[in-house]
Image 1 (cartoon, helix red, strand yellow):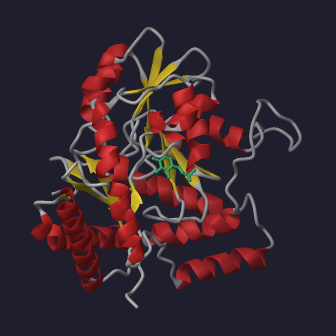
Image 2: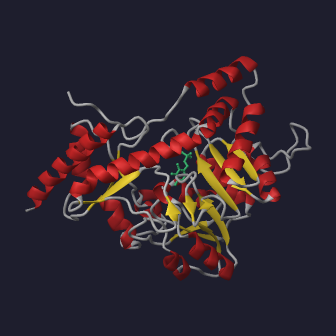
Image 3: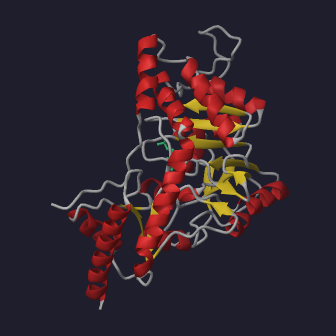
Length: 377
Ligand SMILES: *Cc1c(COP(=O)(O)O)cnc(C)c1O
């Protein structure tokens, strides 16, 4: 039986175990020292003044929208090639997501498309740094300044990535990171809102905690808030992970290099990921594109699964989901996104894969794709 490969898995050491045990033995399971320590370490790593830990990246995006005062009547321009949470966060606050098509090489939102979609109601831009690579932030910030728009970064997939030497998450008025187990670092479930604005940080802290303000009694509430708090066990895992982040990121870069090399001989049939000049990539996922548009990508995924290699379509176009079609979005609205979305797959990618594993996966992928090329002929 061939070895089985999942698409992702977290990297957990005895440090995480030690910190979680400390929490469990302390009796303080929520609102305690680990959230505080994790926030401080995270802000330091990203290079922002503040970091506010929350229960998920999705919750973080919701709070970032609210803290910037985005609401009904506002339009927010964002990418259709993303995890659905980025667009949903805009809907949560009653605003309207306006999609702008992507760059075919980086899969990030295309600034030219952003500019075309600005109206009197546009209030913000929500770029998503997709797959581990920052969007074209110089161009996006230029557009934002010109049209007086708020920028909130969805940096959930791009911890530690840089654009012209500046970290993802330091461009917008606020930015959001996520720590689901498949991300570069994990807390189980969890997220973080980072900002240099004291006001936005205070708002996020209040809203994650039922709308309480810091000087108020436990049962007094200034705003309509939520329970989006991160618990101490999650923060303990997060602290251990951020203390090990150099290793976590450099291992992903090493793994990406191994894939580039192993896929070299398949360059006629698959396109490996492209990193734009001036950007560094931190490899949330390793996404390749099948060059022949007539090959049925979903059948390729099924064939790979049959031989023990789990892969995923990355990512489905958000505007083509049932729920978004009901809001009036149509096939054909964002052709570059749609074409990319129909031909890309994410390969198994996690710390622990060895050069031999990567070679094996590349070999299996090559065999399956060649079989499908023959079917096409
Ligand atoms: C992971 C992710 C999120 C947030 O996900 P959660 O599961 O809520 O933590 C948001 N946006 C993008 C692009 C993501 O990849």
